[in-house]
Amino acid sequence: MSAGGPDRGEQLARRRQSLVRRSGQLRQQVVDQSQALQPALLWADRLQDAWIWLRANPLVVAGGVLAVAVWRPRRSLGLALRLWSGWKLLQRARSVGSTASRLF
Image 1 (cartoon, rainbow, N blue to C red):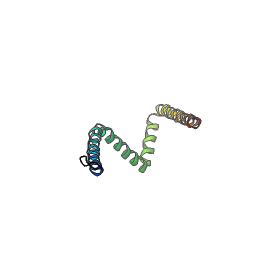
Image 2 (image 1 turned 180 degrees about the horizontal axis):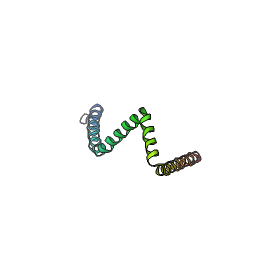
Image 3 (image 1 turned 120 degrees about the vertical axis):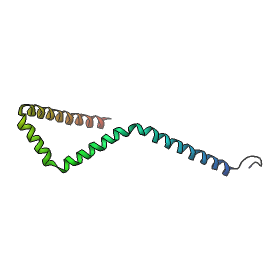
């Protein structure tokens, strides 16, 4: 060790202090930048709450579907066919995606 220079312990203590300060700054940046996501996260929470409610009250959903089917049967049938086609397309896309992921 040189008599005039700082020893290793002091260097490490200063480095640690610098890193702790930098970590605090980065944490504050994350908090500040995440404020922009707040509205989207609130909507996601609302959607999750609605989904939980719908799963807890399936008779209300079934009653609504039945009411629409009775009130607008032709439109209901068209919507049901589009939903079925979309579901099948999603299943096909998942199948192709999983096959592709196994290849690579």
